[in-house]
Amino acid sequence: MKTKQLKDLKGFIGTIVIPVCETSDTFVSFENVSVSSKIFNGKKDTLYLSEQNGSIYVFVGIGKDTDYKDLKTIFRRIAKNQKTFLDEKVALFIPSETDEMEVEAMVSGLFLGTYNIGHFKGNDLHPFLKTNFEIHILSNRDFSSIVNRAFKIARAQLETLALVDLPPNIVNPKYLSLWAQDKGVNFGFEVKILGREACEIECLGAFLAVGKGSENDPQFVIMNYEPRVSSPDLKHIGLVGKGITFDTGGLNIKTTGMLHMKCDMAGAAAVLGTMQLIADLQLPIKVTAIVPCAENSVDAKSFFPSDVITSYSGKTIEIIDTDAEGRLVLADGLSYLIKNYNPEYIIDVATLTGSAVGTFGYECAALFTNNEDISNKIQAAGNFVGERLWPLPLWDAYKSDIESEIADVKNFSGKPVAGAISAAKFLEFFTNEHPAWAHLDIAGVAFGDSEFAKTKHATAYGVHLLTKFIENL
Image 1 (cartoon, rainbow, N blue to C red):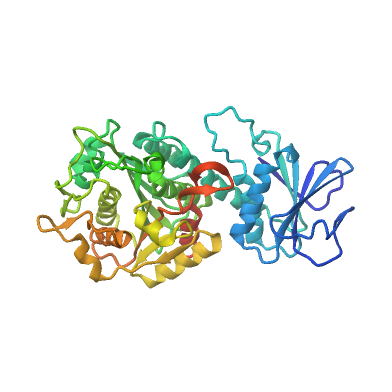
Image 2: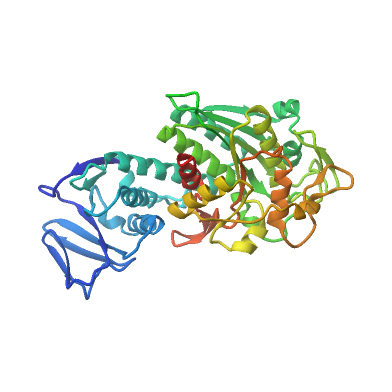
């Protein structure tokens, strides 16, 4: 996609997209096109089309108080649903009162609108993706850096959407490790992959137990990013993403909901997309990310309920439920990160529990942390970009839920209540009391229903949230 800056429409023939705030004026006008406010007054989610002198004018209602997420969604909808009018040349008009973040939301929304879940269908290429396509930014101000940033955000989110939506016979652990290596080369971060034998040497016992029943070898992905211009006071953040590329539940096999378990690597996808975006934006921060990738399959080699396994930390785990596998791979991911890299901040991201969905529905992720600074900053970042979180407690009153008589800890409380909290307490056990750790349970927000597909699909939740949080550290 090519971009150009325009100060006026002299000589321009194509489609002009005009965002309009809701107004009580009698007419809405732009250039030589005018429409009665009885027909169109800029109310949010409304649209008015007009053709004049060979150009198509698309008036887009953005309402009175439209936030970042609303703007992004509105313009994603335009790009997805109005492809007929977006061929070859498009000019996006930027009203004088528009700020940089609003421009970012509009442009990234337009680019996100190119996404099509039909990866294995013969779909026509979206006009924006054709080699001769040009988008013009119509403004007296130079927004080129913001437009470039918006493309990078959308590009990382598009990659994340595809990772989660592609089927598990394509996206297996090896696929994710190769994806990481490819993006590391293209965007500038280091990638190290530990296969099954290397993981055995490293004694990643909890991680390996989960992948025992699959013919696809687990892959322990380690990524390191440092900006080109480094400094001695560079902050260091660690990320861990749950990469269960398909979850049958293991021997505690799922009786419902297995169809959508390709999304159980959405935490990994969020971390992978974040690494791409951080490197693409060249953020001035050091990041180490670990993505433990495995399939939780059913086989004679699968691990059993009542097994006792030894984790990377040396702590033993009693297996109560093989469907509580995500916390096992995260336990080894967290322990490995802390022992070998010891970052100042740690955030893990996982589609971990149905309990988080039962608590919050599909509106926000569950946040667990005892660090008030992280809690405030990540909630602020989430509120801004429209990827919300809400805190749940990590009180020691819940510690008894993971106490085991035979091992150091057990992986499941066996109770039908407080499941997201007991899972977080389990993870906390493997953080070595790190003072700046947070756990995000994204089970309700990573995959679901929306206007952009007829079936449940990925949201790319976490990519922009994590990047915004890291920028604000």
